[in-house]
Image (cartoon, rainbow, N blue to C red; front, side, top):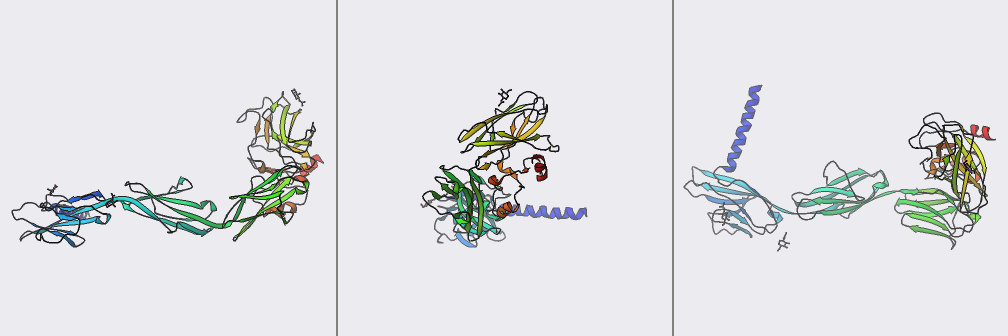
Length: 483
Ligand SMILES: *[C@@H]1O[C@H](CO)[C@@H](O)[C@H](O)[C@H]1NC(C)=O
Ligand SMILES: *[C@@H]1O[C@H](CO)[C@@H](O)[C@H](O)[C@H]1NC(C)=O
Ligand SMILES: *[C@@H]1O[C@H](CO)[C@@H](O)[C@H](O)[C@H]1NC(C)=O
């Protein structure tokens, strides 16, 4: 076994040595690759060993005779000359001069002929063109996207890709990109950059469009208004082909007038009501359609107050009391507040909610209503959480964000005392109300946001609080306690 391997190795070694000799044998010059730029002049050597007899030298390229020392009258190709010392001179080189050049030296018998191979590499800056050539690509959602960039240039350019201002992190420098159009976020402009270190990098772009049913984003699915005030409902529509957007109110297309105006800027669609009337209150549908489908989003225009916000000045007063300060935006006077609170034990079982009705304390007419309230009779050194709802003549508002608070001496949490749950208001939402469930499910197919707070129908709710632990209170508890 061992001897077999060593024989093989020996043969390889001998073969390698033979090739080495072949490159040099009979020559003083060595095989070279000349890297050069367009319009330069290149000299390829063919320095034959002196053996007394002068050799006849011929230059070949791809089997075509370029020059022959034995035939000085041979008509040489343009830009090529053979020097006295047998060197081949190529002037004003062009990209197509890149390739191998063979020098063949022949002498009378018994020597025969020897050859040496040189190469020219004319470096030139990259150029690139996209595939598809038009630079535009449209695919259906879920289809495979296949795009490429064909680059020229020497040295061979390296291709990298960018999209939306960021480099795409690919495992290699691939000229072809293939992926599934799983989401419309993948649409947009793809740029390939070809670089080879010569001159400036070259770029080409491909605009990818993914055909899909409209998608709607609604930031505020609930808008507070008051008679005489300007109100604006916003819905952002993403679609390809572009969607047609219409607004509906009470199952009918909104009749646009000088008072109620539809406004579009790119993907942002708005319904502007210049001088709100109470008859404008209700649910509006933003309906976007294209050839691939229709999508709706519901936005409610209502006179009820905005959710209250706790002020940072809220603080504990003594061992068993806490002072809360909050603000509410409402164009109509606040009649009363509901204050909900319960003990809070991180990771522990949630205790029951306590609800207090707090009179408004002022008849201030909007838009900002502030209230301070001292809650007494709390347990010492205990953590709580609470929230506020406000009622004006149009009904109960949606809840404020959850406030974490604690009485003096409570073990420190991650931070001290006052903390407003960062969860966006939409994350606290009613799951059950005493009205029939169908009220909600009727629309749920069309909602793109997390549902609307049915302010005008509000009685008592339970909450899902999604921020850290999922808690569901059944209606029974709430009703049993507070009826
Ligand atoms: C080479 O010469 C040609 C003709 O004079 C010119 O058009 C071309 O731009 C030159 N190329 C470079 C890289 O200088
Ligand atoms: C061959 O001659 C040219 C000038 O004619 C010179 O520049 C070159 O260095 C020479 N080459 C060799 C290998 O002597
Ligand atoms: C709440 O308590 C603080 C401190 O005892 C007191 O100064 C403040 O007047 C009280 N506020 C109300 C609204 O009772």
